[in-house]
Length: 135
Image 1 (cartoon, rainbow, N blue to C red):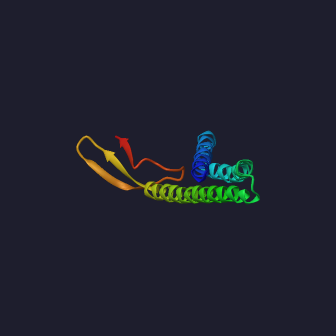
Image 2: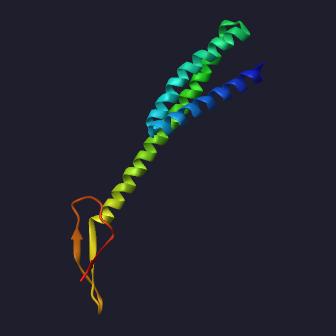
């Protein structure tokens, strides 16, 4: 009987993560997926409590559902922390790329030689790393 509830707990966790992944693919937001898993923690916790009450027929079976909700809550917290970490990394990388592309060297190509002129500063967003002007 105990292995049945462990298998049921594992399947609820996998189902919650799959539903969270489906909502992530639909909305393209990891925060929304973490929120869906958080909501599913309560839903599956209540469902697990009711299921355990029907199977075991003991009032202490409610704690099975609370334990399941706790694991799903921790799972939701992990997804939320990963979303924060990914957001920080994306902001850092986009700022780093922006800082690299603000000042670009202008190369003037002549038929005889290539000269590097002054830096060109872009105010209209990221610019290519090299601006080519043909004379």
